[in-house]
Length: 370
Image (cartoon, rainbow, N blue to C red; front, side, top):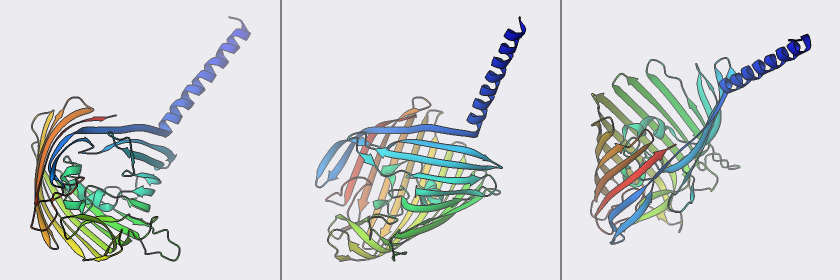
C-alpha cells in the first residue's frame, strides 16, 4: 500500500472511530422514548337515567394515551427530564387533557423538581393503595372520585418536588399557582405526601388543599363534580377543599392485601352553572382490596368500599380478572355494583347517574401497551 493510500486509510479509520464514539456518547447522555396505551372494550350499565345502557368504552382501566419522555445527563449526577402525555378517546378520537406534561431537573442525591401540568401528592403517595390507583382502574374509583385517587384532575401551573429514597422512606410536595393578578390564593392548591416501604410492607399518606377551586379558568383546578339533592350530579366551584388519605399494603406469596382511608371536604360550594349556593359536603372512604397473581398470566382483583357522605352513603363492591396474552397485550373482565342510600345518586365513576339507588357495571376489554 502506498504512503498516500495508507494515510487516507488511517484518516478514514480515525474519522469512523470518532463518529462511532460520538454517537455512542450522545446516546449515553440523552434518551427519548415513545410509549403509550390503548384500552377499549364493551360495557353494560343497569340504569342510566332510568334505562339500561350498552356501550363501547374507551379506557375502563387506564384510559388510552400516547407519550414522550426523555432525559439528558448533565454530569455530576444531574439530569434534565421531560414528560409529555396526551389522552384520547378510542371511540370518538377526541383529545383528553387528563395526563401530565412537564420539564424539570433531577439529582441522584437531592431529588427532582418539575414544572408543568402534574399529578398531586394524593396520586403519588395515597392512590397506589386503592384498587382504582392500582390494578382496578377508572371504574373502581370512590364515588365521584371525591379524593382524586383515580386522578380525575391534574394541577396546572404547578411546581413539584420528589425526594430520593432514604432507607425505604421518600416524600414530596406540590404547589399549583392561581396565575391570577392580585388573586394569589384564588384557585391555587398545594399537597404533600410520604411513602415508606420495607420488604413486603408498604404504606403512604398524603394531603391536598385547594382554595377557590373552579373560580377562574386559568387557575390550578377546574370545577369538581358533587352530588345534588335530587339524585343528580352538578359541577361546583369550591372555596376550600381538603383531602387526606392514608393507605397500606402487605404482599404474601403472590397475594397483596391493601387498605385505604380518605377524607374529603368541600366548603363554600356553589353551582358553577347557575351560581346558586349549595351545602358544604364531606366524604369518608373506607376501602379494603386484594390482588392475587393466580398464574403468571392470570391475576384476580377485588375490593369493597364504604363511603359515608354528608346526607348519604354508598356501598361499592367490585371484581376483576385479567389475562396476559403477551408482554404488552392483555384482556380483562370486571363487574362493579354500587348501592346508594335513599336520596343519594348511585353513579359508578365515568357513568351518568342512576334514577334509583343501585347501579351495576359489567364490562370486558382489551389493552395494548407500546
